[in-house]
Image (cartoon, rainbow over all chains, first blue to last red; front, side, top):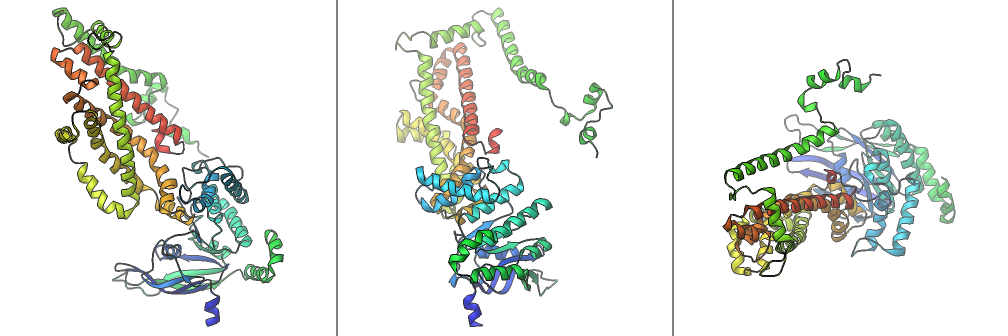
Amino acid sequence: MSDKTSSAFIQVNNVWQEYGDQVVLERLNLNISEGEFCTLVGASGCGKSTFLRLLLGQERASRGEILLAGEPLAAEPDSSRGVVFQRYSVFPHLSVLDNVAIGLELPRSPLLGRLFGRAKREARDQAAQMLSKVGLGHALDKYPTQLSGGMQQRLAIAQALIMQPRVLLLDEPFGALDPGIRKDMHGLLLDLWRETRLTVFMVTHDLSEGFSLGTRLLVFDKVRVDPHAPNAFGARITYDIPLNSDRRATRAAVEALPPHITGNLQPAV
Amino acid sequence: MVDEKSVIHPTHYNADTREIAMRLINRHPNRPNRLFLVLLPFALLLFAYFMGSAQRLADNPNDKLLPSATQMVAAVDRLAFSEDKRSGKYLFWQDTSASLKRLGMGLGIAAVVGLCLGIAAGSLPLFGAPLSPLLTVLSMVPPLAILPILFISFGLGELSKVMLIVIGITPVLARDLEQRAREIPPELLIKAQTLGASTWTLILRVVLPHIMPRLLIALRLVLGSAWLFLIAAEAIASTDGLGYRIFLVRRYMAMDVILPYVAWITLLAWLMDLSLRQLARLCFPWYEGAKA
């Protein structure tokens, strides 16, 4: 047991989330190892997104604690955790290229929040590479409003990944997309996940999406319901299902290889 | 597949019947009609004025209330294109430059202060808690009521006139921009934090660019009040300025001067509005509200 907890990348210990009288989450306990792709499903209003906000640091748990690599999670969003929302994920006032380059500019320029000259060119080159990886290489100078919904979400993913976060949080990222485009996005997301050591949490309403993408499916549901006080009890994780064991195994095998080999292998995987 | 257009606009009527049968809210003027409709009220106003003017001047050639076009042109020529005998200056242009200087300074200071206050109150909860109610109360103070206080504390010079404009419009600007800052989707602010922004760089690179087009729009909306405060201040204590001139010649019932001045002020205000709108469109092409 102690071995298991020490190896966990994210530990959720007895977490409760309450807003006044309303209990949203109760007694959550989870151990997530690095590189896991967790999909979060459940009925509307059952606390999936609340759990994601806790992981993001947008909210603080009323009780319990969440540890990231053994350290308590920072109480505000930071660059260790990337996020893609269903809407408003990209900056409407920046071009596609600058939307990604801003992630390189902000941490390096604490005074003005922007780079100049060579540093700026380098940041833009790096951003352009990331954008061509997600298939937006042709739209660098456009504004987000000129992009379709699917392209905006590609942009949001590129923007999150340029920071090389350890955790990627996705809040129904494809909820507003057409089925065909959604399928393309699944492929893109899985490719990116295979290439990096990302731990992904994805909230979705689409059960089949949850099953096909995740290596672990977490179902949020209320165990206890008091019909006279519907808010008295919160949701727990009722099912925790390991999925797609082949992908999980492939990944474990790749990680077991010495680094000088994996360095060459990873782009091909 | 049903052709949507044919559903919305049935084609089995002839054109006239179709137009008339349609609800008023669905009838739009076409291009030449629109131009006609735009010009019509202006033409009617001018026509009514000159009719009235001709009527009164026919009854009494010395009538001063509704001067004719010739009289107004003569007055403009006297003030704008010939030197003033006493000061040796072209009064019309001197008035214009004095007024525009005051207005520009007032608007500029108010914009900067309003922007800072609005952003502080709208995006920093610790600053918003004390600022927000204060701004609400301050914006209720009628600026003209404190004009005597301004004259007492800032003297009768330029400062008190500029201050009246600043005090009059800053709270309005600040409150509007505070509201706009609050309306920025929280997702964007969180996203910026995950991209490594500090409070300062977040304001600089996310909040400020979002607020700037709103500032230009807010400035357009307060232009009218700014002119009001300017002319009020000039009317009471000044030695030049458009408002000063109007209130000076009022003593001689010189409508031939007042009316061109009013038209000139209107034109200036309209041009300022237009240039602010163009500026917003040029500088913030991503901002959809700028097109309005």
